[in-house]
Image 1: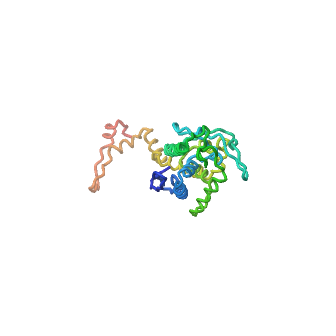
Image 2: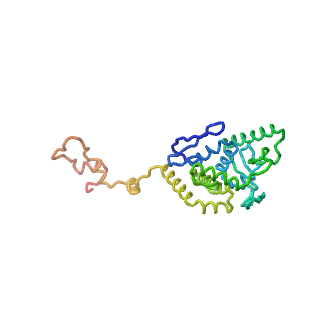
Image 3: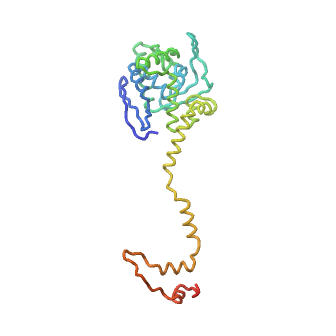
Length: 289
């Protein structure tokens, strides 16, 4: 949860984007990822791929397999149902790792970035005098996006970029980053698991991100505790409740009635107390009391 913010900015091909840094030191996009993004945006198509990898947390094969028919810009939802496998130089399209079709919602900024990405594709095709294929891929090295990118090539390009910046990381770590940011923001485990494509209703997510879940849970407990109303001491409350529940003894009534209020002046050495018969009559008590 963001409590206090400072901004870090980096520039894309057309606009400046801003990340938000929390008081706890987390950022909407970490400093390392922000540096990588800044460099990636030199090539807008490549910058878009890195951006989508961060905000969705999808596997690299799923990212390569994503087609424009899987992207609904009107609702801001991506459908993930396939993946690209690779062994050495051989590649093939296959089912997702969890064999499930999942839908991932994205924010308005990401929708805008994808819309720009699509316009670049349409512009290239217009120059070439062709139309984008109906099954065009979102990310491709072909001018008309008719072919998918190779997962190993994507990982290698990302690693080369990170190495040039002196950052020890990998493309797969963007998936972990996406998960930990969601957990830190208080998103429930089942939702995080659904976005990542973890089977078992969150069991895998809990196992992999136990430390993050624990930290988030402790932070949630502290936040809730800070919002609770202040309670009275139980000893004081019991004493007050007990005193209020019983009737005062006769001597307490008389003592209260004859008590001298305190003042700044010294009390006289002797003072006159009304006779017992007078007190008895006044408070409806027997003289013996």
